[in-house]
Length: 236
Picture 1 (cartoon, rainbow, N blue to C red):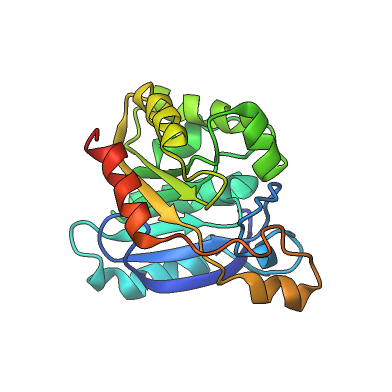
Picture 2: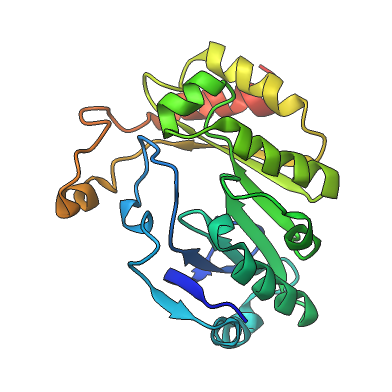
């Protein structure tokens, strides 16, 4: 049974999937998003290892709080980099009737069918819909994320879309129209949520001695964010 490299665990999450959830943050990510607020999750080696059964003990402890909607969400970092551990954990969760949610940018290494058999929801972080802008924003190749997205479509797993709105990068009405068109081609989307850019992770960059890519960019105005959210969800 593979061990998981764990960054941290949040026991009573309210925003990462339906209901009250335990959030397990896995270590490791190959993307370098300009707005990333968790650079401490990038490297695989800087973490503690846990067996599937160790994580399950935590989930059982908090199970009374889950109710009908809650469960476990595995996030990161990029959880797909530890797909063997993730699949084993989700399989065990399904055996015990615990709802599973995957929070991911889809930046893994392929072969997702088995994992998705045990996944109830996917929170999919759309970095950008343009291949060129995707690379500029993340340093990665959009085709890898789209390969995962195609697997989710084929599995018909319920999909929640998330997208970070950054002033000067992804906050225009034109960008939102392009995003809306991109999402409209995905058949199993149940929810679209825009997340406002913030600077809460800047101190981590300073502590790690890493230059912050968006130095001087202000946090997202919540009123503008609401307008953009309405343009996506209400068609305005």
